[in-house]
Image 1: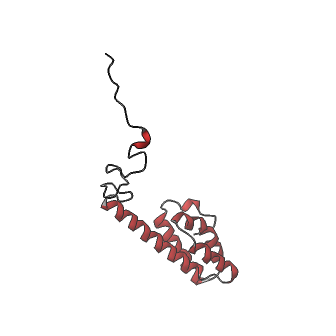
Image 2 (image 1 turned 120 degrees about the vertical axis):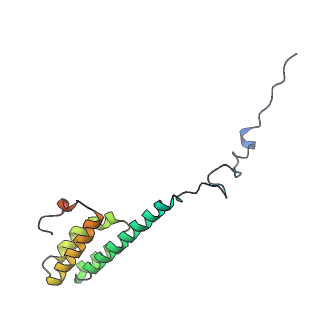
Image 3 (image 1 turned 45 degrees about the vertical axis):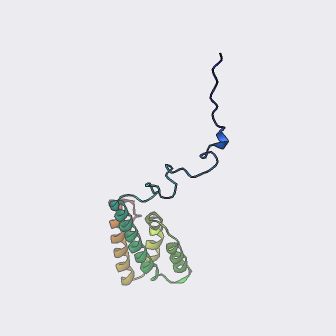
Length: 133
């Protein structure tokens, strides 16, 4: 006698293959795993980083408000478009250059801006262009 072979359902008839939600899948509703949920300290770290970015961006906006004309308009636009601290870091040379030689008010703005940059990017002072400090 020949033993009967068990048939396996075709791949396309299995619920996973046709897109039916699987209760064990991480993307299923009610799943215990949520992307970007993280631990509470991770959330606090993200909030602290965002606050720091907003603070330095406001300082950049205050500094660029002292620059008149089309150059000041361009700098303000560039600062408004930033999404990360690195974007502001890349704009620092243009901002410091625009503030150079404008007077006592801009010297104060430069020192405040430099302090904010040092708080976000510690030990990066050697990367500044010559004469900016």
